[in-house]
Amino acid sequence: MKDVLTQRRLVLAITLGVMALPVQAADANADLNRAWAAGYRAALTCSSLWNGAGKSLDAIERDELTGIYPEIESDVRALKADVGETAKQVRVRYRDDMPPRVAQWTGGEGCVTLPIGASPPPVGDIAPRPNLDGQSWPLGDEGARWPTTRGYGKFQRATVAIEDFGGRTSSLLIVKDGRISVESYWGGHNMHTAQRTFSVAKSMAATLIGHAVHRGQIDVTSPAAIAEWQRPGDPRAAITTEQLMRMASGLTSDTAGNRTDAIYMGGASVRQWTVQWPLLNPPGTRYRYANNDTLLAVLSLKAAQAKADGVLNPSAFFDRIGMARTFVEHDKDGDYILSSQVWTTARDLARLGLLYQNDGLWDGQRLLPALWRSFVTTPSGPQPAGMFGYGAGFWLLNKTDGVPADAFGAFGNRGQYLIVIPSRQLVIVRQGYDDDKNRLDIAALVKAIVAADSAD
Image (cartoon, rainbow, N blue to C red; front, side, top):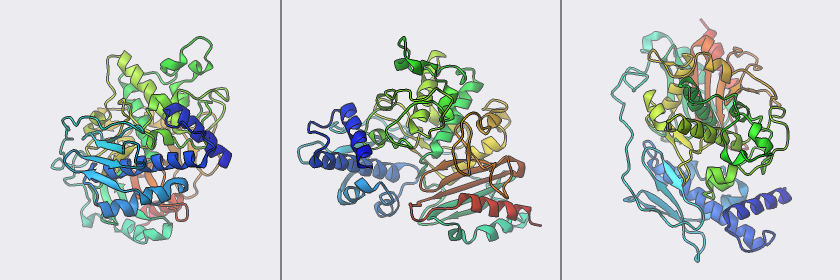
């Protein structure tokens, strides 16, 4: 493990140019850990304060700055954040002879984490997102819940002891036949509290790609449009966008699971970090879960849309389906970090689920191609080991006993889940703050909800 961490730090140091000392030196590793920790605290504090309804500093300490990577956790807890309410900027100093790490709120696209050593940018106009609260559900929040006489108290009984399923839950939402049947929050959260999606963002990326396919802007079966791979003799030029979506690119990466610390905590640009990795296996032959694959798929989407005279604008798409409290964050160069850095509410996740429940139709208008749901939920090629399969940006529950075979979902670290079961007209959202010692059993929860739905 020590050798792996040393290699990852060396690659990061070369990429960002932040270290002059040999990476083996203990003080160099300590400096980099503190720089990462400062970036983590700045980013998570900024996004938690100003995305959606916002959270208090005490709640941020309790929820967002716990359960993190052990090599930086002590530094994250020790470092202090300087919050600039007027400029909506968070600064965290980690060394006296270096500028503080800075995260800047942008408004509708959340916060940007600046690279190590960067000075704060000038603060421009902050564009707000539309307020759709007064619109009818599902675009807005009016009339979202079934009347109590509708008879869905059975879900309440099945989920009232949510702690029995493990983890630390912050929200639970069950939508049946298009209306909310169960909606519960804990820890001060409410329907306007935006929480980090972690890898649920990957399913959002697949949705944006699907919308571009519907508009004729991208062919996912064609080679991905990554400019850096187009030099003669580069074998990566054969990798398709679909293979990136299916975690089957054949690329290597720094760690299993590909933590992408350089982007999330170091402020490196998406392009700077993702295009560098060499091919290890023939494309389409190995499954390797990697943030890089999704980030590269989004870069391909952006390039394809630019060629088609389009612009990648996640907020505009999500606003169309009422997800106006969903914040898709980007790097300093404007590339979206759709592998993890998205903040959203439970109701907004339910709206995304309803789009898929309705097979890509929203209020009678097609936003995703016909059969896109089938495409993203059909396993193709290599599959992960374990109880869940993988489609194209979505996980599959087709091997889970007691759950319909068409169940699929978006999964994220620390217990973020969006489950869609079209055959049951069910959408389930669960958000949380799980850790390695206490995790939700999502299969057991879904099984219990399906059983309740089947009861008389």
